[in-house]
Length: 255
Image 1 (cartoon, rainbow, N blue to C red):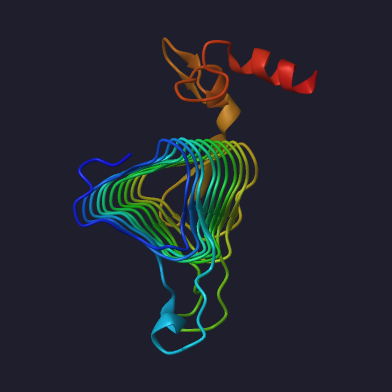
Image 2: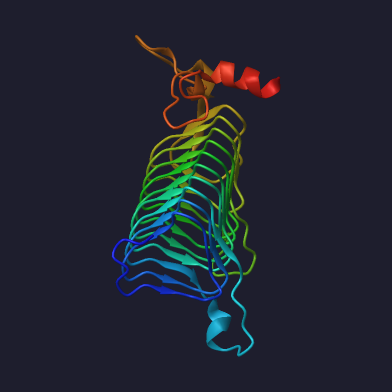
């Protein structure tokens, strides 16, 4: 099933599942696997060949997988070797270089640039215009807000690349920068406009340039709202504990 099927190019070496919709002017290269119930909107490139394609006559495109029930919005460019889980959703005009792994139910916002060999977990929210350097590693249930930059070169230009690590349930607020090799613990809050140049322990609230520890995030209290963190007990939209609550969901997981 296709929108209008105008100027669509699908390689004979691609595999297309059931109930897949493909928009106009979209190109799907060799060894792309699109699972069932996926929508790929107009003007997308899926499985863009790597640099070797232009010089190696024996080049073989790496496998690219778009998991079932995913939505790829217009003008997305996904290089070969990307592996998307199920129910992944993207904004417009994203660019993903090769060999990223994206977990189930993760959202990637408009204008985001992921530069390859990045791992992003399940149920993450990567908002608009985020830039991720190669070898970044993102856990599950992580929110990274607009214009955040994850870097990987400690003394540019070099070959000593060290990706950032952001652990489960952490929130990185807008316009923050995480410097190469930094490990941010779980359940942290990185305040807006922060520059994080050192490892951050679990449950830390940090902010500033350079980022400094403000408090244990579990002690953060807002007048009239009480304790706000861990945030999972007060926010559930789009999360697997929606309608049942985080504690109930955790209990069911442990049964």
